[in-house]
Image (cartoon, rainbow, N blue to C red; front, side):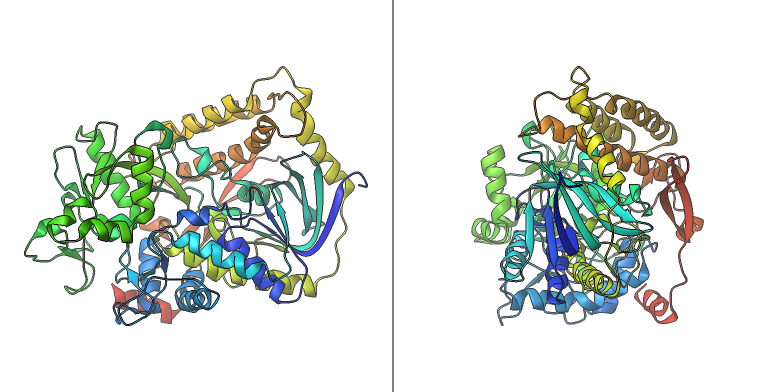
Length: 604
């Protein structure tokens, strides 16, 4: 125990994106000692990828919007297997969280009369996304960091958590190492908040960078917590296709929100071909403008490009499979057409989508004000994650909380664009608040030296296998396996093949060897990430096999329809305490209270 640097906090927050920062700020405001750990540098969080905006029913652009409509939209988008309590809290509290960010210095775009401007986004009935051009997530991180720096947070940058530690059934802290020198650190804490983001690096084509290896999901699972809804992975419809070096890089939904349309290689807008039944056809003077289909009423016309992300992604895949795709295996996203309607279209695009303009100009040599973008689906987000209690965000392990993308419940089978940023802030605050309360009301913890020593030995094992296979080859094989067999369109034989391959890859990972020493060793870091990637990949594959229907982000060729029976429960993933094997169980969804059920019926 004495050879490790030991750091003690009341609350330890793992992850420094929007959810982690908001949790740390709230916990610190409760008067407890807070430690904030981030795998990379502070400020390099995936929150900055949420470019389009933050969903909150403030009614600044359309005064018919309110929390009840937002709640109904979120539940419909999630195919009604959401945690309805989280959906209720999220819709009710998001406006206050946006105004709080504004009070802390966030500079949102404005309406002519000075209110926060809101834009259309996929799946939302009314313009609802408060935004800062197409850099909303960046502004959110800047605001939270500027505010949080004054809260007395103890920040540990470039530190990776290896194991969560327990004192009996209760969480007791975490064991970690710093990525620069490779030195171990022991964190002792009365409560731990996981805010580690997603699992995108388990797939070959992803918008996620190297940090997103499912750390929080895996840490919680191996600590005895339940995972939920792991079959629901969101493939964002629009990622960059060309050049190969940037394949998968996100193209914000804000492009479509500002009027961008999807076309195949023949120049046809194919999204009109398959409109869901709940979108009613309306007459438009010029259907090619897209404002032809509506949800609910004729005064809320929206283009088919702003249908939910799962639907748009599958339509793109269908075009490519039918041989109508772009030269590099995608389709075209065109916003340059609006110059036919706006005399100052080029300036308008550059003002509304500055990041997208520079991204395509610098990385692909394409001027989006003059020519279409070549795009295709990219692994972007996972709706599944750590099962939490709606009000407190505590997992099934006492003292272990989760918020943001690594927590499940709010989004159900499919997340609506823009709900991610408001999710981070609403439930980051709640997680920090209740973690601080837990730390105050529960006594100190003791650390089991055997847990720590076992983790340290496991972390150093790759150095003892100097002649073993390299970790990058195993990671690449896993990514190809998941992309090819558990991707946008799934079927039983392919997913069972993926499970078999994951088993083989686990054996290969156990033989991985690295050279050199612990300082500045990216091969060692990759070797340590493999266990997390394998854990979340197995959880996704097993859950997807069990869900024999198509719903939201989970689409099966062999079961293409929704089965009402599967709307009554969630799949939970747990580690068997005796065998150590992964177990899948069905957890019934509690009945929705009458007042919420009435909202759903009214909004239908």
